[in-house]
Amino acid sequence: MEELRPLPATGPNVRPSVPVAPPAPPPPDLTPGEGGVEEAIAPADDLETYTIAVVDDVPQNIDLVRRALRRKEIHGKSLRLLTATTGREAIACIHEQPVDLAILDVMLPDLNGFEVYQALQQQTREGDMAVIFMTALDDLPSKLRGLESGAVDYIVKPFHPKELLARVQIQLRLLDLQRQLQRRNEQLQGEIRDRLETERILARQNNYLLVLQEIIDEVRSTLEVDDILATATAKLGAALRADYCAIYTFRTWGMLHLPRIAQYAKTPELLAQGVSLPPIEHPFMTRLLREDRVLRADPDHWWTGDGESPWGDLLAARSSYRQQPNGAIVVARTAPDDPWQSFEQELLVAVASQVGVALAQARLLAAEREQRELLAERNEELERTEAQLRVANQELERRASIDGLTQLANRRQFDSCFARDWARAKRQGKPIALLMCDVDYFKLYNDCYGHQMGDDCLVAVAQVLGSSLQRGTDLAARYGGEEFVVLLPDTDRAGAIALAERMRAGVVARQLPHADSPIADWVTLSVGIAWTVPGGTEQPESLLARADAALYQAKRKGRNTYCVAPELGPGDSDS
Image 1 (cartoon, rainbow, N blue to C red):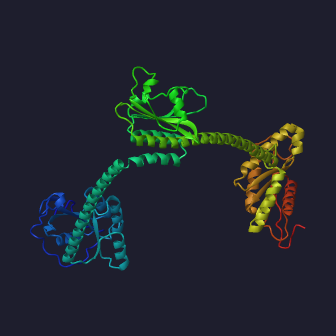
Image 2: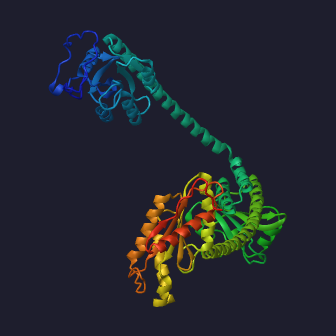
Image 3: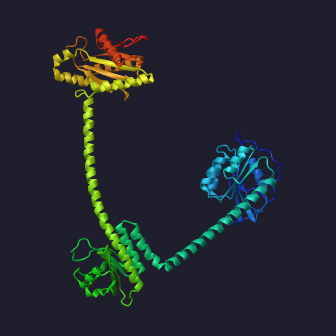
């Protein structure tokens, strides 16, 4: 046996080995080499060698396995042993050197054996490697987990060397049989593929008429006329051994020539030359469009290209729908001594009739597509108009709910949100608070600076109030004149006071000059605070009145401050 990794040294983190049968002295045919690598007993190539990986964090256990597998050969093959003491080392080792059998300890210092096996399953194909779990865990759940994960065997420590050898021999034999079966299956699959290919070739040769029937079926089964015509020309030309095949159609009555809409040719040169039918008034075209049969012709009679016509023989059949001609099919060969057979002419007529149906469908589809496009344009125009109306309505709604000067919510929007949030707070038993704010000595400000500056002052104060809000559910609104109201759902006394002080201080920080103010050189703000948990017969108007009363108290205290309205007692109401 050949060991490709040195045995790790013991240390404080290494578990003691599980006792087994007393080890026998090393057999004479196992000679340690340099670096802990053992030489193979019977050198052989990989096809004649079993590679076994032993993964255990206890070196003594690895040595016991090595002694158990000390025989030179198993099933006529030599043995090569790989060892690892950690799960990650085992994964890296087996990734570099595939093995036939892995003997995994379940309890490893980094990954357990089940995790190692799961990782190995992702980097090996099924049947490439067998796994035997070897551990001191002898409980039934551990055994079932190991076997259900795909392991072929589960050995409990301590083990007997002969038992381990017997189990390894059995699994290697089963692995060989599985690989033989796999190779045989691959061989049989190859034979099946060869037979199917032969049958496919025979079917292609023996179903000449079925190929043409497919053309008819495709014409009937799809509405994509371009695909129908391209397929029909290619399949018909190939099936009839034609060098050229083309389909022509009427686009408008009274045309001088029938335009070509689909063609097939064996070579690019023939495709470039094509067949140009004579004008509509030509006797050949008169017969072609009137007679419901195949016409044979010599295209030299109307050939207009340079030199002689490349076509030796030509067949043409009209396509029609409800006895009205709508086009023609032409097939041509370059060899003059290759006459058309009668059944070929019959098949050409059959395909021409189906092409006539396809061309009629194409016209109906074109008309329907035009109607759909027109309808789609009208729908798009209608959608654009509706979108414009929605934008206009949204703008109207916004303007109806926004104060035009301050861009805060207006009184109407506040009343709506107050009623909604009051009902929600009452239903959920949560607090709700109101802040009534008033710009101190605003009339004196207007008298001193004028109404335009007064409007600018209100806008600045509104910006402070709006920017102080930190939740999307809070609402700042202009209540009237220089008064503002702030609606605070789910807010108690402390939260309302904190926000009121932040707003008051924010207005002072803006330092808007107010020369006529008796209390400061700047514009200041007074705030009245009221909060409650709605219940009983209490109405939202009472909270608004209490906040307004608190605002009055703040003004009486000297302004540039806030006051909190007294809380209602258990027996108080808004009456």
